[in-house]
Length: 333
Image (cartoon, rainbow, N blue to C red; front, top):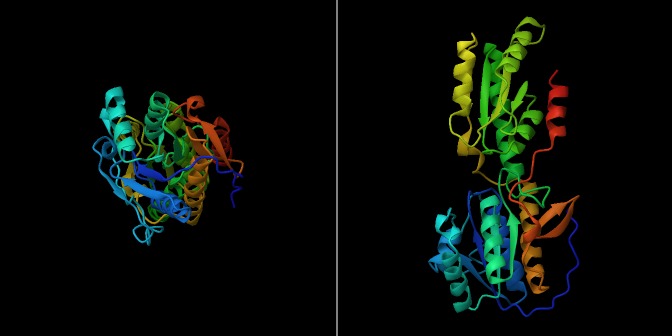
């Protein structure tokens, strides 16, 4: 269980708003529910902003009630919908969103999202000084300031379940599979799924693919007493087609790889118990942070403690720990 901070109310918060932004992550609904019910319990009105920053700019904002957020805890996706608002990069557009919050007498904002959402919130808070709290929610798990992000555990388990199933076929037919997982230019998801699934190799965007090393490793596997069925987990990378290009290169070297792209299957589905608890804790404490007058921060997890990190002190990405890759290589021998 997470250790929650002790916070003393010092600001009269009458109304808060909440939005989900960027790519959806399992557990976002649990966070929305926790924010709404924790606030309503304190007599605070709650508004739901539709479609992330796009809804903020367009004033697409509606009241949230306790019954409205009922029966969403176990659902993937987001009740509030989400969007990637390119217009929010413009200062004038951000100020337009600020004016809408003021017009609706909102005293605090909770932003639930990943690195792009964090960047937008950091700019918005710096320019307007509006009280807000960011809750890290992304299957990539690459947000600086938090050991865990909402949605990562579910996505990792979804990927692991797929790999376990693919392993059955790989063993039955002694085949080589390239399994692509999401994560863009972050290798957290690929590394966790690869280690948990016993992958023979993990290829992440943080390291360039050494085709000679990959080929040599596969040849050694063919000549050893180990089964010739193998699974290589490949992080998708920012440029599409990374896994297909690798498959083509291996084919030209005499291998016969099968490609399986998990894609958006990792985003959907019921959130795991871990993600539901994490989202619930973060959502409820976010309300307390605003009541304590301590906005302008990301609320994350460090060593099982919920902690606050000033937005101004955060970068957009958490680097992958090289020790994880060393561990993967060690136990793949």
